[in-house]
Length: 488
Image (cartoon, rainbow, N blue to C red; front, side):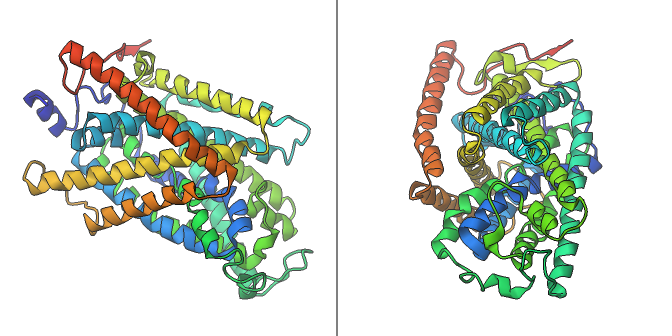
């Protein structure tokens, strides 16, 4: 890297990272809610039902372990953000501390994550609407949801931030309401509607014990649980469009751990205490199951509306984040030139439209295999989540190595226990990948089979990029490959 680039990086502006052109439109209020929204997604609202059905009450242990890993991932991200806030986020950190190939690979794997996550969220939204409109084909609902969210993302980042604020607020209030209702049912040992079941501690052991399917079942759902925490890393991307990231981001990241404990582990615990794990289903939100069972007028419908906002929120975040990451890649010639385009409203519309095309494929997936679309998308997306987290952790480890050599300064906001905690979290994520290989779930096997295909495609792409750079006499960073300038 030339001295001019080093000086730019020190000021938080990589000349080809894609930060130019963005407006600092996101406020502290919105960043805090984006962090909350990232910690509460469809993985909790819909995915818990199927995982309870598979693993029983022991699912709490899966969420606790994965939550600890998520906390260290976020602290690693926070340390890197304090070093250099950028809309390119971990892609730029991987490029700076690991190598150009790492930035390229991690950026595309992040895109794979959100491309598949968006399909899962669109599917979830369609499943929720089916409660009210059972005769409307699932794919039509998915198409309408995509059209609305695409419009919001193309208008302005300020509108995106405001929508995410209210989406996140609705989700948080809904979970808090459930926690109060669930706790009241458990403390009074109340009978839950006309289900014939009474809330209480006995539900943890009365139906086959705490591990009714055996402890291995708790391990086998880890992949899906890790997916549930996807999007927490979006705070790092949003930092590039925040006026004072070094003040705002640490607050958002520090609060992740208690959100995970409060919202996830607390919710799963109360779900298993209020009703036996055998009552929950994979095709219905467990929160809808509980509120429908207790007989409150329209409570099930209200909660269904809430979980619908959760799905729309996550899909909204996917369009936002992939637009920024693709622009960062395109400015270095590592993604189609079209994805570098920026509108007069400071929106990277090229990358957003590129992702929307894949989401459109998700609409057709809902037409072809409506019952399996969600699980297929979740399993493939998990590969992207895991590789994104591993990239963040390894980048932070390499950052600390540079710090020990005196090449960079370690910020005051640091990852606790580094580098030991970083290596342990990496080992956990590798273990999750290994468990996916031995899964007997055909949908997990699909994602495992796709992994080597992705590796070959990414490897081939990097070979082509490297050859092109070698012919041009460029070592690592290239000037923007396409029209990255603002357009009307």
